[in-house]
Image 1 (cartoon, rainbow, N blue to C red):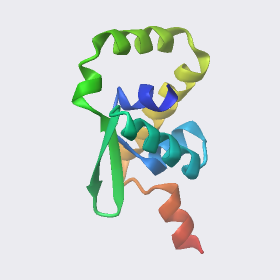
Image 2 (image 1 turned 180 degrees about the vertical axis):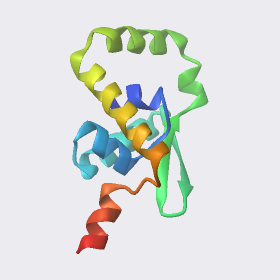
Image 3 (image 1 turned 120 degrees about the horizontal axis):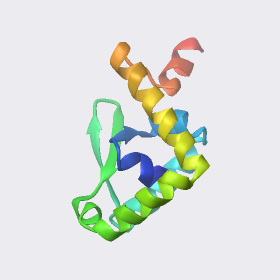
Image 4 (image 1 turned 90 degrees about the vertical axis):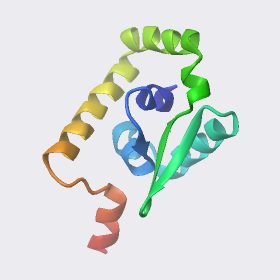
Amino acid sequence: MRIVSLLMQNELCVCGIEEILNIRQANISKHLGKLKEVNIVESRREKQRIFYFLTEEFIGQSHLLNYIEEVMIDDSQLIKDHQGLLKHDETKENKIYVCKAFKKKNLS
């Protein structure tokens, strides 16, 4: 639900989700794969990164979106995730955003 709640607000690449949720990239990719299998998320490639977003079919399920939004209001972890997303978006808007994964490769 954490990944879906983020994608309800914005499309994100795996490394962005990793930074916001502080979960290993391998685990996020596994969850995204499952979400893709059940047609909740789709992806698009932009150069070296793949961005994930919610499918039109899932967005059309307004009762599910309403439920997630209700949970987001009271769930401390989802509130923290939302704050992380806002910080992530602010960083992207203020300068050219570089994922942690690319920073690590360049430092090695």
